[in-house]
Length: 64
Image (cartoon, rainbow, N blue to C red; front, side, top):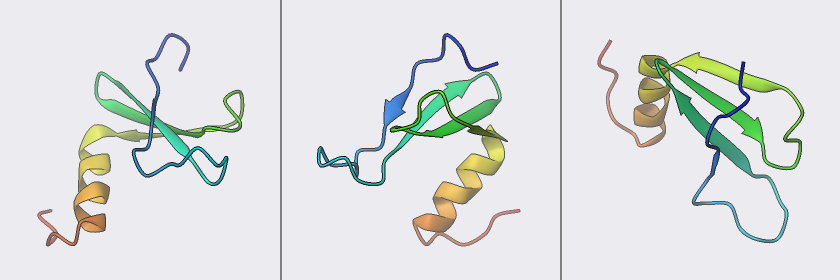
């Protein structure tokens, strides 16, 4: 359930209405959605996997 979450738009998202994502943290889960489709599908992943994904994007080595 994602109602009542505090959603945050990516700092890389511009105001031009392009490809934007929003992220919300809840307990041990991170939720991701398209900022243009707020009632659309939501991707939910465990927080530790989200951290690994972000580290990978930053070019850090895997620490499994």
